Length: 137
Image (cartoon, rainbow, N blue to C red; front, side, top):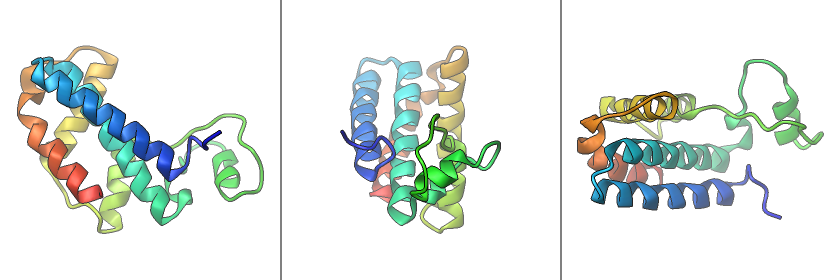
């Protein structure tokens, strides 16, 4: 069984979500595009962080269970990692990504679609997805 927190798992999930995003954009389903593109970016961002150090995906609020799990000291009963916004923020601190308002908008739209409804605003963000994927590879 492949570790769901491994680089390869995040990368595979990112590829799958990116393909769905491209299909969504081609069908002019821009709310679905925002959802899948945001998931692709989040998973790719986590892959980039894990490749540097798995500790970088630990959620700092609440229990230290994931810290010990990723440190190899005990199995986690509940997997909790950072979200897309925090992953992007950490990659900016590490100098991997620069500030990009369009990327921030994509993540905001993804969150909006996931929690309510979306709109046509994501239509123009295909290039943002491609640019982010290129920066994180």
